[in-house]
Length: 128
Image (cartoon, rainbow, N blue to C red):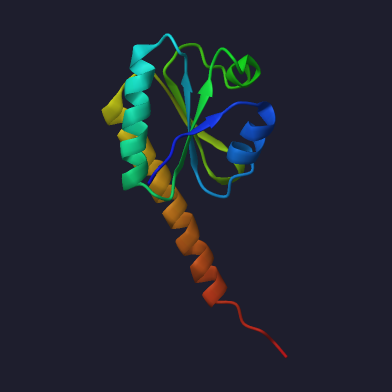
């Protein structure tokens, strides 16, 4: 079952997001935002379809240092990171079709990266 990891500290963000070897979608949310809850449910559905992508959520008000670092101005908002924390995009607002499209692109980027590594590994020749 896919989960949406609730990040509760900077340390946890560093470990779960910045040190991740898989692509990550970060959902910035707030307790008072009904659309954020709807988008959580949509993230869980996307996680079932794109198993190679990790989904986490950050309370935008409780972890304002992270929110400010990534210039998140409204919730819901989504940050897309390639492996090891490289930002590849951002989406503000509750837009399920666009979120799905961005997650699919992030997933494909990871798959292409893995296939290039596999191809490179198969071409390595040892000289004795």
